[in-house]
Amino acid sequence: MTHSVSAATARYSSSRRVSFEGEGGLSKSTLARRPSDASLDKAATRLQTCSSAGRTEKAMAKYLIVASYTAQGVKGVVAKGGTARREAVEKMVAELDGHVESFYFAFGEGDAYVVVDLPDNVGAAAIGLAVGASGAATTRTTVLLTPEDIDRAAATSVNYAPPGS
Image (cartoon, rainbow, N blue to C red; front, side, top):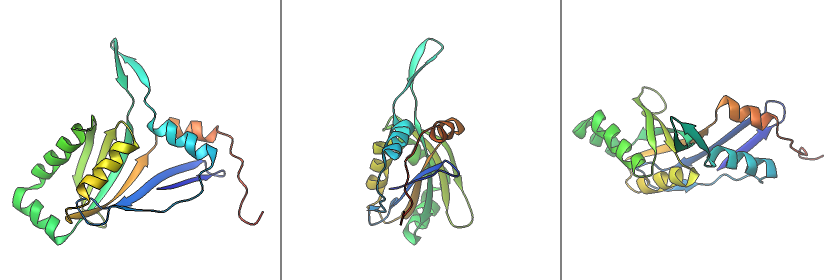
């Protein structure tokens, strides 16, 4: 997982490469975690409650999953269709108490772009690990942040010493 905070842009990103229906599992890229990274990570995944028509709901973390199919994965999509693939992903995400916000196939670098809401990073990692063994695709999973999350990140004090200082 890569975490970065730039004081100049107050940009926070958290992404990891995982095998999505492919071999390999997680590919690690680590940086030293500063306390502000930990607090941003908690803010992105913490369960909050809100009142909506008198009921309590959990706030969800949002993830973008970009899948690139292998030849085996393309054969599976051709055999069962795109809607079957979307339904399989929706079922998998629902089992983790999540929701698929959008699912699109595309031309270009990625073959499928999926935005999901999940309770936490553990669920996102579980999906990557569970589908990683099939060899049908690779993915890049990115934690998405709201403008309000960035406002909170920008307001967070960071004691950063650049390399060589």
